[in-house]
Image (cartoon, chains in turn blue, brown):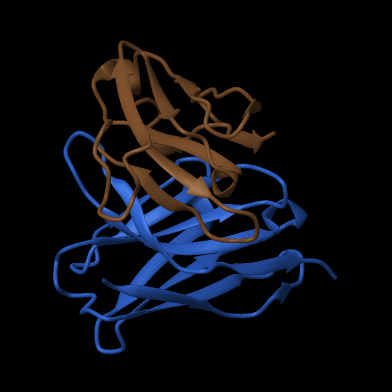
Length: 122
Length: 112
């Protein structure tokens, strides 16, 4: 089973860009078995889907975040990345990367990375 | 932003049966999209418990079962154990507003 690990700064200043990378191990990100996604969870709150990418580079984003998000994939490094622009304190959350099993009837998320806390503060 | 509604909390004694509801609408569960369930133990990442409405991944005890009807779905835990104390989330796809994968509001299960 694939394993995922998030990495990136734990502190980002307001109005700047939040950048995270997810490294996939135990399988190739190009295998086509999964899409690759980002999900976040503010402290004490629920889960919010941010977006997903396929190995081809095809993306889909949460409409509420679409104007500020870019997800990219680097197959040579078996990694995919998240950029969230113009952040505010409301973007403070634990950010998870996860594999996504796509189905026409709606797919599900798993396995998940352990998550990384990103705080937006000056 | 959650379009799937769950009770904030449910509780039960060890060995009892508890159920968690997930209420959606005609643009998600009612439109025929599958419901999936996740368990989040304290301080850890969620893990899928039920996928495709009623399927258990390997390793998930058969004490956990899922069902779906109309615009809602349910997760049942039978023979409740102390280790089941966690947050549980349902998830589906919503076809409104350009489409998005959506999670429920979450339910805290407490073992008395």
